[in-house]
Length: 548
Figure 1 (spheres, rainbow, N blue to C red):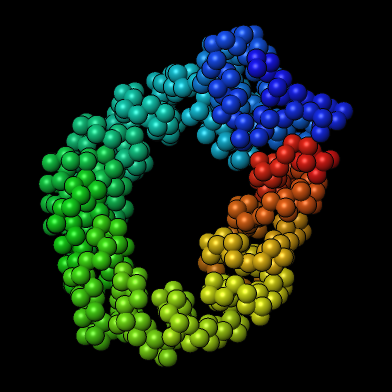
Figure 2 (spheres, one colour):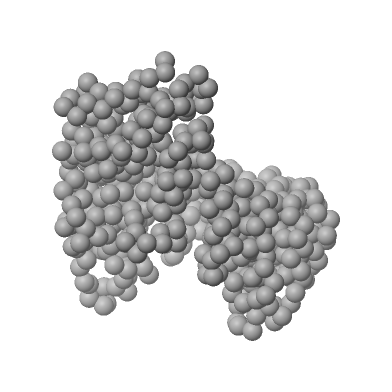
């Protein structure tokens, strides 16, 4: 089979009679293999590429982009293509603003297009892309562009000398804020590079006042460098010694827990790492450090018996009720089903006044049948409070425990339909995704929830609230509703069921007009993000029918 039209034959008069295997995921590997075949005529390949990049889908360019990205991927198998330079140049323009030199190209592009173009850069003709980034890091005068371009170059071509040199040079010249930006990049692209490791070691050994004159916490100063070292210095004896020394210097600070995790990453099994975290559990009065130490122990030494014994003892002996609660929560996470943690949290619930106690305790107690009803009763008290934020959180806890709880679901729908605050809708969409309720709720209930969010995206305008009302809302409540639209769209994308996609496209398609973009660009972008997702998961004929 040498004729490319077997994969793609566009019939404008009757799409259902056309051939659109180029949009079917199961055919992608076969198509790319076709481009690699030496017995396929070169002109056939050229014609196929040309047809892909010239495709006019007649439905908002969603499938035109998909065809173009397939052509770009095909270059990995057909690098001698005469259209290769132009295709890679277009990918770079879609991916990064600084590749659009012509002022007419300077426009704000939809994020799904940008993200997909960047992903495709890793799949197309790598030599062309690497050459473009090498040229950029050698010619740009912008430090921010240099950092981003060097990081991308290092990702595409691990160990690339131009990328590493581009990151190291400015940091040698300036220990100002650029240090922190550059250090994060080193941790992504410089695995095993001795120069980068040496520079990070030098930085970590410096005293805070040698690095900056500004008031910064130890975490602000050292966190990125420590994590970067943990990513790139596996087995390096000097790096190991440096982290051990750092741990001894700052053993009473939160940054110590980050250093122990980095030490374990570059020297797995190092007893100083696990022993330090256990020692922190024994001595610290800082609940954040307590929590971070447990998080890291769960990764590097799960089930550590000394940690369990220490937390158990501290729960019994501390007179600080807040610390006791935090220690019980840590113990419950670290040792699932631990009776001391469960019993302690159960007693705390009887007298607790802080809302967070109920919600965190639910994670530990709800899976235990003996305490599930007690938790449900306590959480319903939170639902009935006047504060919408608390009610929302409580309702999702109830639905996580029992997704068939009709009363909780109806209360949630009522809250979402009556609230005047964008943050409630945003948090609800986020929680719907985080709690994986899309997998637990019946399809009818899930679609009812999705419909609420779709209506919000269609109709919502920011409503001013009285200043005294704001006091009870989220700290981010004063953000514009535009941000809420984008957040809700992002979370909806992960939960919309496939059978609901055509209806979503038909419902939202009118918000993609150029005039609407001028009047309300954020709503346009939110809708674009959702419909892009639909286009990726519908057949071309079905999408074309839904949007036209």
